[in-house]
Length: 179
Image (cartoon, rainbow, N blue to C red; front, side, top):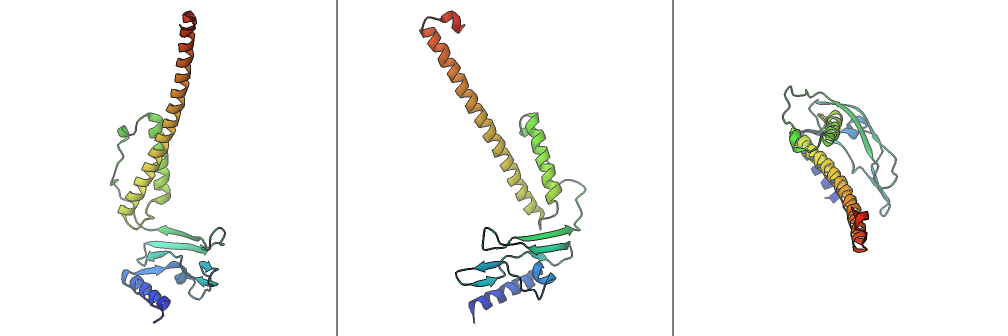
């Protein structure tokens, strides 16, 4: 059996078993649009796809392959809406006392509100949303920490320069100037 055909059959069997559908093929079953062009083989393929659970939890509004620009893969845009209800009680709460100064808490709060506004219910599971949220928090924390570190390094350099200037003044007998 042809390897490509064999792998396609395996993928279809797994998708059927897990009740997944290829959104593009569901919406455009006879379309000849492909997501990837391999110039070395002169071949087109349908590598890039969205596989979604076929459970009615999402309404797909639009799925579009965009133009290939920087890669041999075409970006795939999916617009959909979820019907999953938001839980009445949050499953997790951030302890703001662990975050440091008030300005940073406000910045992080804005990031988290934006994250939830954009991503609520888009992941298949709460565990996946949690993992993504942890990455967002880590990224914000690292960014903030890096900015603070740069500021402190600049301030330390400035203070060392002031100290060196004062030391030179004392060494030259200008102690009154150094005061």
